[in-house]
Image 1: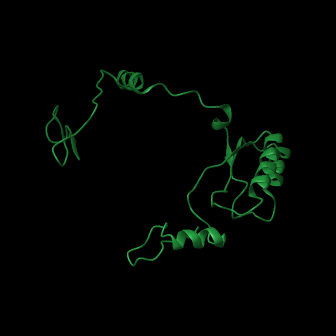
Image 2: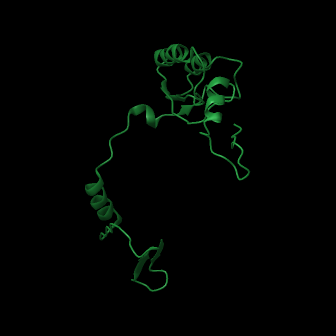
Image 3: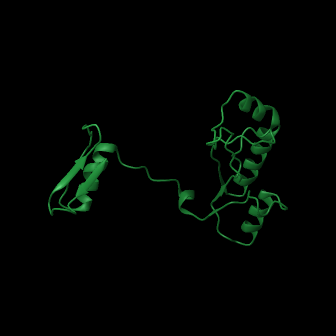
Length: 156
């Protein structure tokens, strides 16, 4: 796809696509605010985010400070009146073995009690240390392969 929005000829806008077909929506307005209004009228207006999203975020669960449990680090921030509203869980290598669910529920409760919103996300990586699941996925050919046909590994 190629877009020329007036760079070659002023006032001329050209859009081209390989295969000769291009589905596009063009929204024009007299001002950027007019264009944005037309766009959001088409797509929907965004919601007002929860208050915690606008505050400082911290990652209390990371590879740099594992000697102290994450809730203890958050508690120290609260005691020292260091602003924090969210902690980003670095818990995204799944599966993580048995007991993760109950541990996670406990840690989540501790953060909430401190007024810190816990945030987690899903990452589709499979940790090699969870050998049974990793080996099964390897045997079934479920992992992305590199140019030599070997399982592509991401070292985090």
